[in-house]
Image (tube, rainbow over the protein chains, first blue to last red):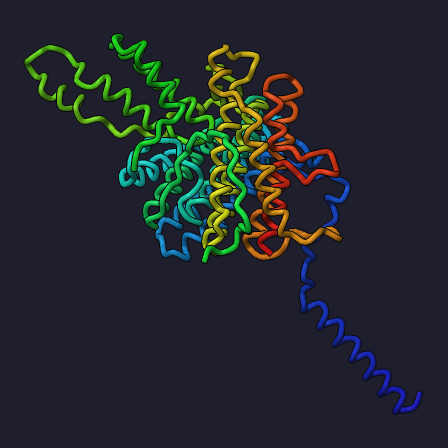
Length: 232
Length: 264
């Protein structure tokens, strides 16, 4: 082997060594998709694999949907500069804890699992306090109100409806003994909280809450040329 | 603003008449719980007003004692603001309009709750539409009122309803006919559909597309109740879309679809 080929071999070896060093120092970014759920199964916190349409995942997913709806409402509220948006953020954190509790079905949970994900009565009591605080400023209800009162108020009414759906998904799990009753109590109270703050938002923004009126079902006369466009 | 005489208030007032002379606190508590249950099952505490009705009837009916009575009189004259949370639903049960207690995951409450969700979605869409100055937002408000009537009908399962209940909450064909008229009015101005459209076309249009999808979910929740004979078929018709291709969609879902296209 002559000097030039030896040096080129050395150079190549040095380059490949450098390349190896570089790839081990630069961590691979993990992909968000793992494909482990492609066959329709997912895992609970207890390690149990269940079909994705299982009641546990239905409850979990609806709670997640609720948290997302609250996030959207929070953005509208923050845009208007209302400070109680912080309460909603805390509620999102509480919903994460609800999710952990739901993901730990008692039938497959060990003591350590249950200890880590137990959902206590504290969050429910916190909601009651917030409800009492806001209710103090609200005018009394004298008729059925429709979901109305501005964008923030309507967004919170929608959260309330999703919350009640989440509660309906959780109730059978509590009945079966798979989840602590505190989770259902929290969601029951949360829907009352969301109703209260929806009204509170309408009041703070000076928006009218629309009232239910019994429809008489007399057909309206057809409006000639009325195309519902912007009124002139 | 004049206080609207709504159905629930009339019901409670008639109930108050029958128990007005019974001042036993336990009876009053049961009456209040029944009132709250009806308001609570829709997630709308409209029955606050009924508490005031009850309060006004029961105010001042304290003891006749003189000593230390002032304090009791004052507390009975200053009504406490009722709490929005009653905790009666904490164990997972709720009441229908017929007074039946059922688990909250019952099909009746699933249909009721989805209708409530639809009304909420429509409320949000209405705000976006009103911002843009469109006048047909009033139609959507009327639809919200119709959905309240749908809720009353759903909350009155036939298997446990008396004649008086059914008469009070019957859902007629009128609202569906009204929808058809609105659809025909708006459709007149729309270009024909020549391809599948995606939910798009601006915030108001997309919000209405979302309402349409929730409406179809509400329809899926109502159909089994109609099949079981628990709810009038008019409720499903109101939410369902017409099967006949030659007609314009006469359902609420179709109405919402027409409106979304109209906003483009």
